[in-house]
Length: 361
Image 1 (cartoon, rainbow, N blue to C red):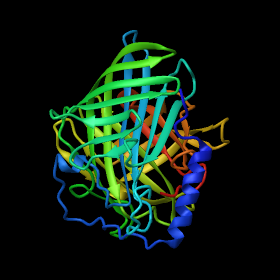
Image 2: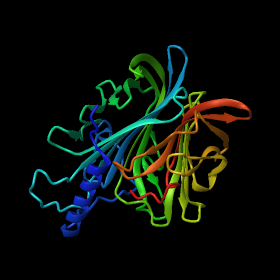
Image 3: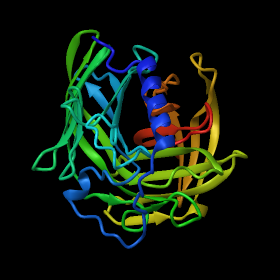
Image 4: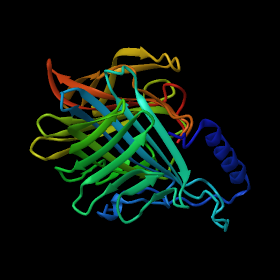
């Protein structure tokens, strides 16, 4: 399989963008403000005026033989600070990147691939009317009945999945206005679809296998970059066995402490409970040092989220993704099991960014 986006070409594109940005009148990004209602299906689609956006799916799968697998796929859209008056069709006014990863304990390390391209020319697109993002054959789209379809043939594995919603969208923060810091502009528009029912095929070592499982989808868009006081974040999204869902987030400051935090808990009865910053805490239980980058990650965590107290254990330790060829970040993105009072209560994904160096987005 060809390498669609190598490190060399990625650096060349970013160098060209940087050079052009110095000569450009940067665009004015719309602010993220409270009081704006989200409207679906329109807000399932792309928001090209905003600085950055992502569609993010994580989940646990089981093969017919019962083997557990974790999977992650993310499509990122970026509007660079380029001169909007540039009439060239080749001006990269919108960029699209994608990551896909498979956590397979039988392999023992994360398998992943990544792609990127400017939007247009039939190579990449992000539709505004509903979810439909694609890069050279990699696709995430939403059907008219609400089912999501993901098709990604990566280097060493492939996913062909259908993801069926079982619950309404979970609007994060204040009706979708999700704070990321103490200043009002440090925010994103953000909703989740937890408890997605997944079915389809995973191809490993050249062999397709039927799979089923449960997944979580996030869609988020924003204009403000990560605060200069922050270095990265710890995030967890959990599908709970009682039918509930939990999202907890803390943004770490340069001193390693919490700069901001928040989250939401959907109870088994469907009621939703926003979680204020002082109700969230992450406490490392165990670290793992990456043999690939030398980075230390707290891969086992104790999380306090409101009245919930959970211990997170990884499906496997080596779930580090090196995306320096596309988005420039090195981060840990791993399938985890949640335990409380000695019993398993859910499964989901833990994301750890900024441990290999301050995250810039």
